[in-house]
Image (cartoon, rainbow, N blue to C red; front, side, top):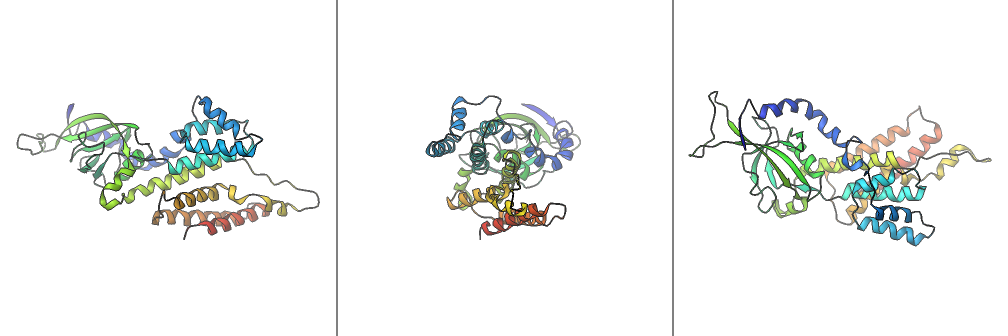
Length: 335
């Protein structure tokens, strides 16, 4: 443990907060820097075999392989590594992409087990106001601690901390930098000659618990601040679709016009519709609940689709296809 004054520890971190506030969320989700969208360097042989079975001539084997990949809770980087293979046929790619979306949206979330002030503390970092019993923070962190960094990323506010922690899985370990106010024998916080608080710099590794455990507190309700993570995961699932889905191609057929041929394109394969279908399944299974933030996100996506469908710079047949996508999306939005 090292001691530090305001000028030697927390402001050193605060200097980087000036740029982190606008970049943190974007950095988390821009491939290839985003861990969930980076393919594994080496694929597990069992995963390779199951992915091969997704293209098996027998339908029942393809179904079993997909079900097994879902049940195994395969790490996303393994699935993305498989998706990066150019040898996949269209069905393999569609099935594997559906599993990736499922993993991104339903993956368990990590938790520290703290309550904190929502904004940056007066002297830098996010201030802990209480510790939840039985959670990982108990015995490691303390009320009044200022969390200034997690895994090398400056903590701008409580929302930033939640995004970083909940994008990790329970059991993952995070490296934390803490500013802990030094106290005298009377329990009062010490100050230096300038009247500024004196902090001890603490660096520790903490194994995360699960967001599911937070339902034991606050009458079974989790913090509404989990919703930014839901939105970011939805965007990441959409990005996976844009990056890995088979490219659609309208092929003119003699005796038929091109616009008619676009009618055969599968609107449910569009990344926005496919992601919404995954949400509907998770809602039906009780794995998540509709929130105002989700409704807002769905409305924004629908508006974007409708605007794209009326883009005069697109060919008429593509606008027709996007109108069909927007119509389907609107039909699927949960009431």
